Amino acid sequence: MKIADIYSNGRFGLSFEIFPPKTEAGEAQLLSALETLIVYRRPSFVSCTYGAAGSTREQTLELTVKIREACGVTTASHRTCVGSTVEEIRLWLKGATDLGIENIVALRGDPPKGEPEFKKPEGGFAYANELVTLIRQEFPHFSVAVAGYPETHQEAPSPAVDLANLKRKVDAGADAVITQLFYDNRDFFDFRRRYTEAGITAPLIPGILPVVNLNQIQRITSMCGAKIPISFLKELEAYREDSQGQIDVGVRYAIRQCRELLDAGIPGLHFYLLNKAEATLRILQALDLPR
Ligand SMILES: Cc1cc2nc3c(=O)[nH]c(=O)nc-3n(C[C@H](O)[C@H](O)[C@H](O)COP(=O)(O)OP(=O)(O)OC[C@H]3O[C@@H](n4cnc5c(N)ncnc54)[C@H](O)[C@@H]3O)c2cc1C
Image 1 (tube, rainbow, N blue to C red):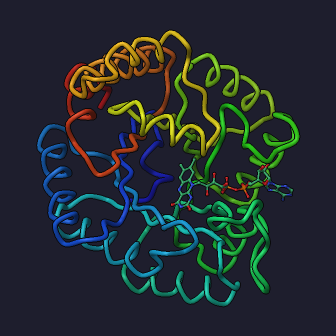
Image 2 (cartoon, rainbow, N blue to C red; image 1 turned 60 degrees about the horizontal axis):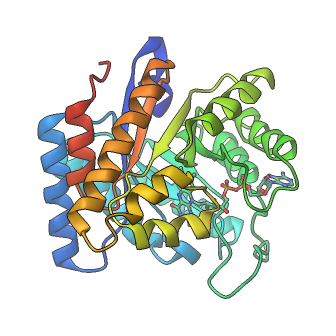
């Protein structure tokens, strides 16, 4: 199924994001995590990330197909512009077409490790909107989702400029916007208000990363620029020496966060699984998700 159809006619979209594991054991663990979640609630789609610096070029496609076949679910492949010429991206998109992939999450990508800023690869793209345009012009059979930033992308000079740049991606043909993780729903609601006022009508899907480990989430948020509200941080810190306690606090927080988002009429939820099922399963079990 195409992402464009998943959110149509008021249908609710539940999606999971996973990454290509490095080992066979990691892959077995991932498939088992997905199976656990799917038995409880079948997602509308599962998306598979494209490694930083283009490190999983082929694995992303292989895993997208494997999950579609092994789990019988709709899938999406992420693709970034990092380290690729336009011709290489075109070849990759042809490969994705041949493999029957229907959905692409089109991204610019982060600068490779050690490089302070993103540099347009020679013969490549500088921004994700250019990738969306290529897909729309030459591979119109794909449905496309893009990234949005409730707390504003780190490199953007202002929220208004970042939103205008997001609008470029949607105007270029993106069918849905999936957000970066965030922990303060007020950031999402403010972003959604400005998004609507800017005339963007593509479904806006909140991205949720349940916190399961304080050190890990501090590392992740320091990289992507998302804030952890002080009260939540204090709650987590109270369990610094108790790993199960951190998971419990993180799960309770995500349940409250998702309930408030659901009450506010979001068209879907996108869970960053980090290839694990436990936290997301507990959250889904506590929510009364629309069908
Ligand atoms: C849902 C989601 C999935 C992700 N998946 C992956 C993944 O699989 N692999 C990975 O490596 N990373 C992934 N990322 C991270 C993403 O690659 C980074 O956040 C990256 O820094 C920006 O990518 P983008 O597609 O949003 O870029 P862009 O939309 O190109 O934006 C990047 C910056 O440039 C500005 N900008 C955009 N267009 C223009 C323009 N035309 N002119 C001037 N300025 C412009 C924007 O305001 C922003 O500051 C994901 C992020 C999200 C939210």
